[in-house]
Image (cartoon, rainbow, N blue to C red; front, side):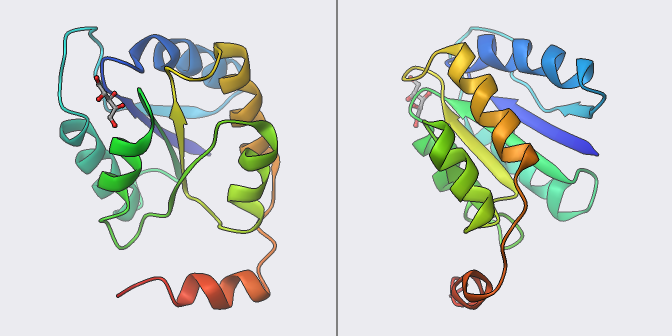
Length: 142
Ligand code: RB5
């Protein structure tokens, strides 16, 4: 399982720790940056990560910015991406089970690192339920 990951400056600290966590669990990780705390635009890492997932270079993705909203808005412009924001474990489960999010978005300035790890662990362990949820997902593209 290959996981792509990206953040802006607001999410870089959690991203760095999450990369170690994921590698320790045996996942392959593709890091799209940023790797600095210098202010930058989340779009500049979100678009390349989304394109890589769409091209099949990674199975899933994780994106972090301050609120998560900039990342989610950018990523969801890509047809092959369903980016879902989660700030608690229950939402982390549902965003996979019901929305089949292939990118998990975390609001780094509003959750603890421990919560971020708990959400990631849950999202990775959860199976998409399909059924009525697929009918709804099929109606998303415009
Ligand atoms: C950066 O200050 C902040 O705007 C960004 O991390 C994110 O919250 C945007 O949605």
